Amino acid sequence: MRVATALTVSQVLLGVSQASLYPGQSNLNHTCQLQTPFLSCSTQAHPDLTDSCCTETYGGLVMSTQFWDTYTGLESEGQVLPKDAWTLHGLWPDFCNGSFTQYCDLSRQYDPTPSPNTTTGKPDGEPVKPYDGPGIGTFLAPFGKLDLLAYMNKFWVSQGSPNSDFWGHEFSKHATCFSTFDLPCYGPAYKEHEEVVDFFSTAVSYYQNLPTWGWLSAADIRPSNTTSYSLSDLQAALTKGFGATPYISCSGPKYNATEAGKGTSDNGATVVSEVWYYYHVYGRVQRNQGIPVDASSNGGSVSNCAKVKGALKYPLRSVGSEV
Image (cartoon, rainbow, N blue to C red; front, side, top):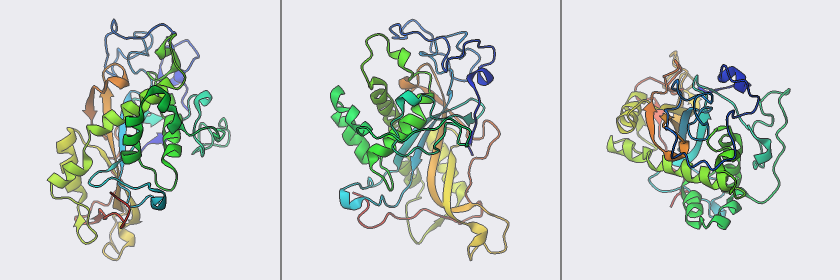
C-alpha cells in the first residue's frame, strides 16, 4: 500500500542545498538531446548530477494505474465504460522508497474537489482550494488534441463525476510532483497548459502498453457474476504480461466476513477493482521507456485481496454501462 508523507525535497534528495521543489532547473530550451537519460532511482538520477528536466529525479518510482469499475453513475449523460478494457486511473510519481507526496504546485491546481484537501492530508497541511475555472478538458483544443480528448473520454473514465473533473484531480495531485513535467522544463517558448497536455498524452501512452483485460482474458480470467477467481492466478497472468508483479487491489467485503470465509483468518477484500504497474524510467517520463519493477521492491505488499483459492469476484459491468 502507498503511504502519503510530508517529506521535503531535502529529506528525499540528500545533499541538495536548494530549497526549490525541483533543484537544478532553468528555463533554457530543454530538448534533452545532450543529456544522458539516466534510470530513475539510480545513483545518477540526482539533481546534483543531471538535469532534473531530462531525468526524473523526484518521483522516480512511476506507477501506471487502472480501474475495473462496473458503472459510472453518469450513463444517462453518455459517460460509459469501454468494452473489453480496464480504464486508466492515472500516472503517479512515488518516491524511490515507495512513499509519495501530492499537490506539489498549487499554482497549477485544477481539481474541483481536492482529495485530500490539504497538501499533506492532515489538518496542518497547506489548504488545497477547489478549482472553479474551465474544465481541464478544455485545455486540449488550443493544441489541436481533439483525438486525445476523444480517447480520454473513452478510456479515462470517472465514476461519479464528470471525466474532466477526474482528469483535473489526477493532474493536480500527481503530475505536479514529477520533476520532468515542471514548468521550467518547457523552456522560454512555453505555452500555457502545454505540460497538462503533455501529461495526458504520456499517461495515455503508458496505459496503451498495459492491456490488463487482454492479459487476464488470455488466462481465461474474464468478468463473470458466477465464476470466482484466485489471486495467484491473476498475479500469474499479469506478471507474465507485464514482466514484473503489479499491485492488485480489491474492494468489497473482507473474505472472513463472507459466508464462504466465515471462521478463516483471511481478511483480504474480495472484489477485484484496480491494478498498479510500477516502473523505473530512463530519462524523461515522457519517453515511456521504463523497466518493470515488482510492487514488492520496497518490501511492501503486492495486494490487499483475499488469498484463499477462489475467493475473488471479477464482476460483469452493469447493463448499459459499457459500449
